[in-house]
Image (cartoon, rainbow, N blue to C red; front, side):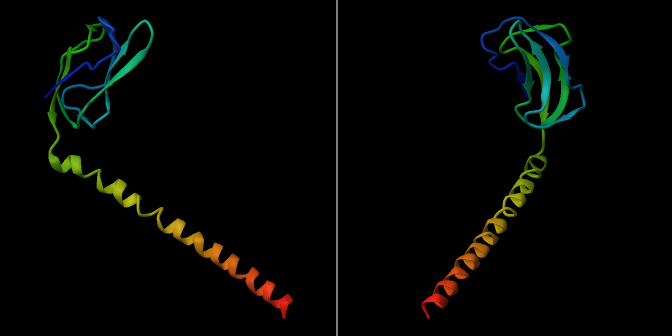
Length: 122
């Protein structure tokens, strides 16, 4: 898979000021591949997918524009992509019992004033 410079706001011939990967590196989706610096901003170009870097096609100081191929990436196996998914799902149910525990003390607090009101009436 060829990774290209995405839309960078119409800038052209933007210099590469940093290369974050080398051939053989394993990257995750959204990992920074290179850093570009325009006259207005510095921006990282992220990997759109997980995989292994096969070739870096730019060098420090090269000037790139939208559509320039910067890295060849071998996509990760499906097992690697699905492995991180269960961890966030496992973390999501953990907060659910905590909110369930909070209403119980609220119900106990609501039950306590009821006998107090009943006592003066008797």
